[in-house]
Length: 326
Image (tube, rainbow, N blue to C red; front, side, top):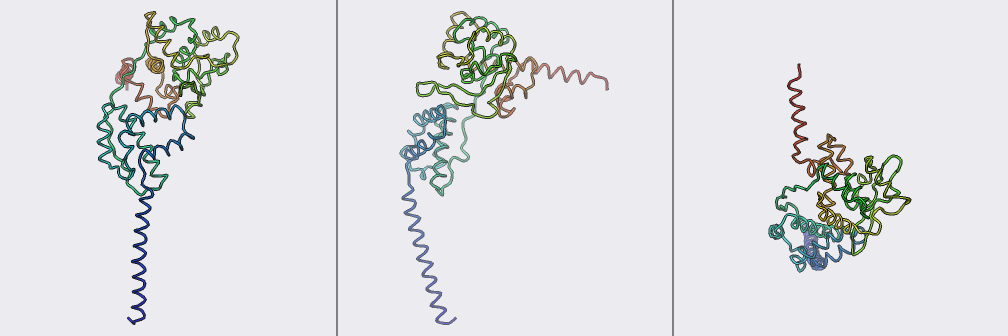
C-alpha cells in the first residue's frame, strides 16, 4: 500500500468516526426532544380523536383515563414504561371489566403516540394478559313473561319504544332512535339506521356503528297493529318523543315493579328476543343477522347459552338419525 493510499484510508476512517459521533449526538438530542409525559400524550391524543370519534365513545375513554390510566401513568415518560410495570398495573385492577377497559384505553393512547411520533421503542402492550373474563348470564324473559309485561305497559307514553325493542331485538339506543317514518306501515318492515345516546347532558344521535347494524327488520303482526294505534295521525318524529334513553329505561323499570310485572333492563330485551327466537327454532345465523352482528360467533358467545329447548332439539335430531333405517 502506498503512502498516498494509507493517508486516504486514514481520512476515510476519521470521517466515519466523526459521522458515528454526530449520529450518536443527534440521536441523543432527538430522544431528549421526543421525551414526553404520558399526560401530554393523552392531551394530544384527545385533541386528535375528538375530531374523529363519537361523543359516547369518548365518554367511555374519559372515564377510564380519569379513574385508572392517568393516576398510574400521567407523570411517566412514554418511553420509560416497561412491560412488567403495565402487567402489574393491569393485575392490580380488581374487576375484569375495569381492567379490560383501562388497558384498552391505555393501549390506544400508547400506540397512537408511538405511531404519531415515530418512536423506535418496543410496544410494551404486546402480550399483556388480562384477567379471565367471567361467564355472563344475562337476564331474559320467557315469551309468556314478555307478553305479560307488554300488556301491562299499554298506554304509557314510552310504550312504543319498549315494544320496538322487545319485538325487534333492538339495542336501547336503536329503539330510541326510530322515527315513525322509518316504519313501512303496509308491510311492517322497519329501517334501523341510527341510535340515540345521552352524551354530555343531552341526547345525541349517530348513524349505526357498522354497515351490518344498518338493517331492515320486520315487526310481528301484533306489534305492528299496536304501533298503528299508538301512532295516530303522526307521520314523522322520533318515537321516543322528548324523552332521553335513560329516562325511558327508568320509567319502564318503575312501572313494571309498581305493577308486579316481569321485568328485565331494556338492554336485556334484546337478549330476550334472541332467546325466545332460538328456543322457537330460529337458525342461529338468522338471529345473528337480525341482531346486526358482524359475525355469527358474537351471537353464539353472547346469546346461545345452554337452552334446554335448543339442546333437546339437537338430541332429538341425533336420535331420529340413529333410529332411521339404513
